[in-house]
Image 1 (cartoon, rainbow, N blue to C red):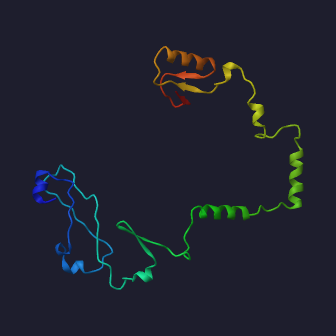
Image 2 (cartoon, helix red, strand yellow; image 1 turned 60 degrees about the vertical axis):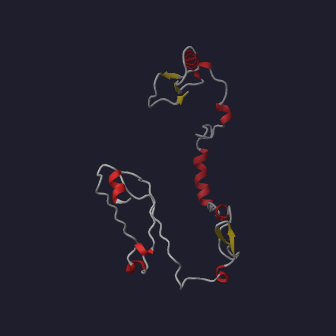
Image 3 (cartoon, rainbow, N blue to C red; image 1 turned 45 degrees about the horizontal axis):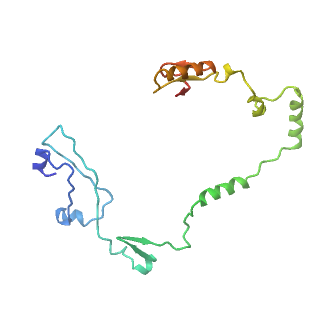
Length: 193
């Protein structure tokens, strides 16, 4: 913003461009690896100010300028130039990274146990043959019929957006099925309906 625009607070989203004639010639001709930008706006201490973006455009170096034959095939697509990569480049194809990960994990072999280690572990397994192991119970046995009042046991329900009488019907049904009801959300609530 110009000083007059800053004083009046007008045109805050202005984009300004500076050509090489606005820069110090000695600094403009050097190569930069970093730039320092100082923003100041002394006219209105209350209004925020700053930069949205900064872009630098420079002509290509004469040393680094390459001929089109060295670059590879360049296709023009509208105002964009698309550089086609050669097939010999080590570029990743879609899914190649995950495919190589799968191949690595499948090639890893599980070390086989020695006969001495296998013999040492079998007496411990035979010690309690009548007692089923924890976590080996099939899911089907657990999902058997339950009493109607225990289906939602351990569930804490909170209702939102329902008006009476439908709200009271939902609350009564949940309580019949074994759920607990809370009028507002609490840390122990599990379901919001």
